[in-house]
Length: 288
Image 1 (tube, one colour):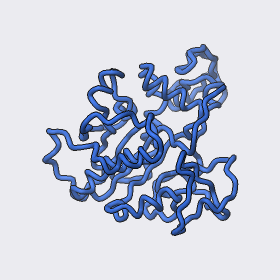
Image 2 (cartoon, one colour):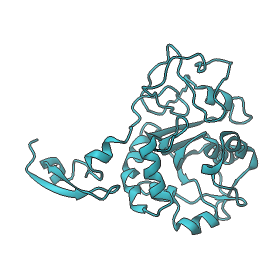
Image 3 (spheres, rainbow, N blue to C red):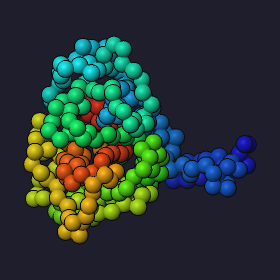
Image 4 (cartoon, one colour):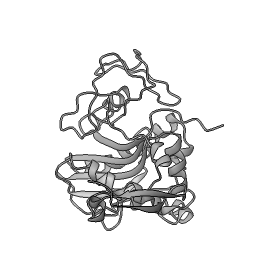
């Protein structure tokens, strides 16, 4: 449809004014309103193909063939410092949809499959974007510099991402400690869940440090610290055979999501899924 007039908007990230073509589709509310200017939007890396059915690890163009990443292999190898797993020959390009029979696993997920409980109760995850340098800056502005309006960039996309799951009985978010909530003034995961009928189900135990300050090994250790518990209002609810969706901002090692999922699985939940805005794929280097 031919554009009927030009409009202008202000980019949610850089705040520069940009022009947009207003078509008949957008005029009647069919097209989504653009929230980023073309320059900022071009810096996002939408995840269109994945190599792992379980965690939704994206395939990166820069990754080279290597035996360090073996699908369905008993041999697990990785860079323990940053988890930068490399693809192997013959890796199948998969669409970023949830699978009801995950069979292509990265070495990370192979390792998790040896963990008690998770070996029979896995956690599937999908993300909208790769956690590149621009996404790192965007999420830092969102989380740490109080630009809560940036959540609008992702809420509809996260809901669209869940359509391939099917039935979902409960949607919840990863909670913050009281201290962290007081510092930020909001829980970024709760803002990202605005398109869902979500509930506050979980709460933090103790005052664990920021995950962003932890190294890979320290992050993995969190899984055994039992950092979550049910809130007082939900501790008596029955979760048997329920399908749970957990929303968060970033997937790095997946430890936080799995620690939360373990609570539901121990109460008899059938499946736990998760969606995030971004999926880390290795070490992020700061700009010089």
